Length: 97
Image (cartoon, rainbow, N blue to C red; front, top):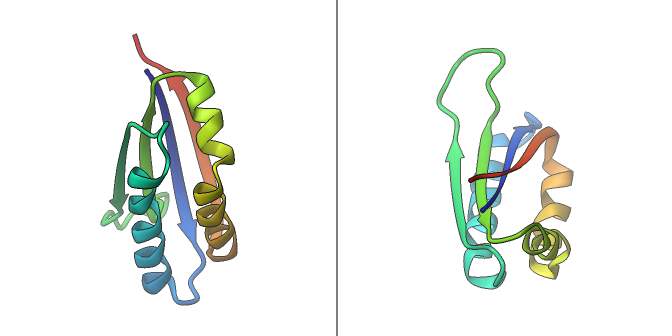
């Protein structure tokens, strides 16, 4: 299984609204992208300075399925929105046994 994890730090302008919209858009991908087997979306409540605002954990059967997700039109629509409202993000991809 392939695991794709992304952490997002949102811009302060309309942060709460943008996090809510991002969560809704990301959750909708479950029914729109066939290669996406699982998605978990978490909004941060930690108050530490190093904390990120939002995380996603997604699962795919293969690296090719992850690539299919990366270029899927529905996913690209979410990326376009997130690029406008996120200050920065971090990613990690790995394969489980």
